[in-house]
Length: 225
Image 1 (tube, helix red, strand yellow):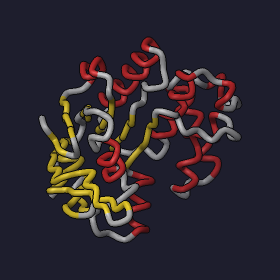
Image 2 (cartoon, rainbow, N blue to C red):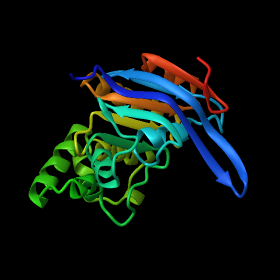
Image 3 (cartoon, rainbow, N blue to C red):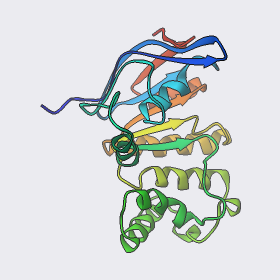
């Protein structure tokens, strides 16, 4: 049976150890996010937002509880399968763009397809199509240092879409942008959501809530609303 949910978590807890001290970054997190949702995860620094994002993005594993992505329980699968899901089902967008400084825009966008074992000609064609989609075709051969902040984030969004993932995780994607450019990026994410992608947005900026259809508020590793 095909699940209607893109993401489900059941009593997820994440514990970090610092010496003999135990720190609970997440405490019994249970959420259900439907396919096609645009969700904002909000809360103060240290509330557990980024920890939750790392778990959902298969970058880390929970200490306890279960995480299910599109019907598949990823909690105890092997590392190879986890890497495969991370490569093909999830796209990441970061506050600091995280572009490779020595690569031009086209190569940055094509990079995830290398890990997806897509041949070179197909990678380049798909990357060019994404550059055109985001009006960046004239910047294909430019490195990140030659692009504005808004252009870099558009390249980063294109890179996140390279392997056609169904889930996009955006961690403070407007945090390094001026307000006008940030609104442009949010409109772009909104249009991607309308194409059917499930988007989770971590943000401190309450003005961005208008682009989402649901808000999850977190404090001290717990969901409070």
